[in-house]
Image (cartoon, rainbow, N blue to C red; front, side, top):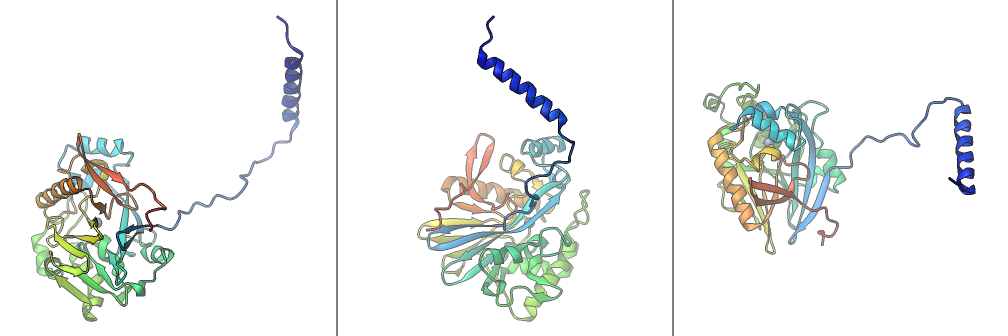
Length: 335
Ligand SMILES: [Zn+2]
C-alpha cells in the first residue's frame, strides 16, 4: 500500500501535537465567564383583540403530586407524571398570574402566594410585575378565581395591602365560605398527603382583612359583566365559589382558569384525576371535563395558574381525551 505524502505529513504533525500536549503543565481549567444561574424575568405578553394580556410569574413551588393526586391507581399516576418528565414526589409547579390591560383598566387575575410558602419559594409577583413595566399601585382590581393561598397570599403582607389602589373581586359564594370560620367543620381535616383544607380559613382572613377594612372587597354573582369585556363564570367544585374569568375583545377570547388543572402531564389525558386541594372533587372533575370540552370545541385561548409558565395556550381533543398546546412563542402577537 502506498501512503501519500500528505498522509505522512498529517501523521507526523499529529505525533508532534500529542508530544506537545504531554509536556504541558497540569493546570485547572476555568470557564470563559462565570455562570449566571438566574432565570429571565417571568413575564410573557400578547394582545387579545384590543386587550393586552401579560402572564406574570409568581415563581414555582415543588409539590408531591404522587401523593396529592387521586382518582387513578397510584402507579398509573406516577407513570403519567414520569412520562411527562415531571418528578412525581417533587413536581415543580408554576404559579402564574395574569394582567389584563383593557385600555381603560389594569386588572390582575390572582395574586400568587406571596411569602406564604416561605422566604425562597414563589413570591416573585411584585418583582416580575415591575419587570413587566407596571407598578403594584397601577392595578385597579385584582380578580380572584378563588381564595386558596397560592392565589390570594400575594395580596397582603403583615397586614398591609400590597396593591394599595386595587379593589379585590371575588364571588359572593367564595367570600361567604372562606370568611366564615364556622365552615371549617364542613371541610375534611388533614389528608394522607398532609394537606389540611382547614388552614385556608385563617389564611383567607389574613389576606383579605386589610382590604375589607379599607372597603376594597367587591363580591359578585358570576355571569355579570364586571368590566367591559370581562365576566366571571361559575365553576364551583375546587372551592365552593371558584370562578373562571373570560376576557373578550374584537372577537378574540381568553378564559382564565384558576385551578382547573394542577398536573398537565396527567389531567388532560385523564380529567378524572383530582387533587387533595379540592373542597369537592366530584364537582371539580365535572368542571374540568366541561372546561376542556368547551375550550377544545371553540378554540379560544386559555390561561391557567398551574400550567407550565406562561400557562397560555389552547386545548385540543386527543385520542386519550384532551391535550394542551402551549402558545407558540411570538414576538408578532403584540400588534
Ligand atoms: Zn392553585
